[in-house]
Length: 250
Ligand SMILES: Nc1nc2c(ncn2[C@@H]2O[C@H](COP(=O)(O)OP(=O)(O)O)[C@@H](O)[C@H]2O)c(=O)[nH]1
Ligand SMILES: [Mg+2]
Image (cartoon, rainbow, N blue to C red):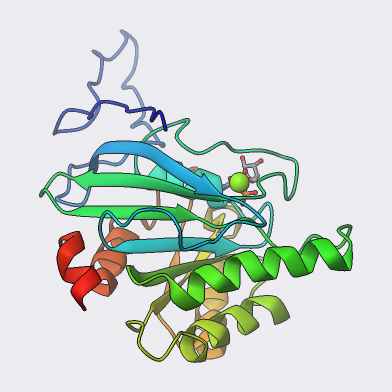
């Protein structure tokens, strides 16, 4: 499988050009201000599985964090923001166009290795029952049995809050894992937080925390709000980056 490797941004962030004569240049709104140990210095597509194939069949590389949410919630944008690559994951205005589980191998600045897993978006009312069932089999098979899965990042639109299928997913991950599989920690992310005024954003996050009973982080792919906080939460949930042998033996 051919990967699309992209090179690391240099430590210290983007270069800023000299301010133009006649006034100070406003600070760029869309950059991560400082380099952190979590920054992805390598990010590579490593493979995908679709409906009809075994969702646990991809080779094991390192611990995994999966990203899930309704179509159009901002999942592709969030993953691209987290790894600081514009086009690693395809973003699209067409809900539900991504129908497979995509795996991306990441190496962080502190040498921690992890795999980001992009699960297909759910909640597409237009799909037939059969298609929704196939989707559920694929995702549930992965969430249930993947031995390296340690964390689930569940994205919800900050303006919409948790809906029935989001709550079902939280419950499934808490209770539905195979007995022998390691537990998975769920982090809820409220996306597009830039679309809410500050006071509304705070009350929306509070409501989400009460409903989800797991950590909740506000995030924006536009302003990069929540970048460091989310990486910190993911890394805490992943625990140590185990070599494949240790994972397979455990
Ligand atoms: N304002 C704002 N728009 C966003 C944000 N994240 C995504 N979007 C927009 O929401 C739409 C869906 O985003 P996408 O990442 O493709 O969602 P996905 O279907 O969940 O992968 C696109 O038009 C994005 O530009 C965000 O943080 N803020
Ligand atoms: Mg997408």
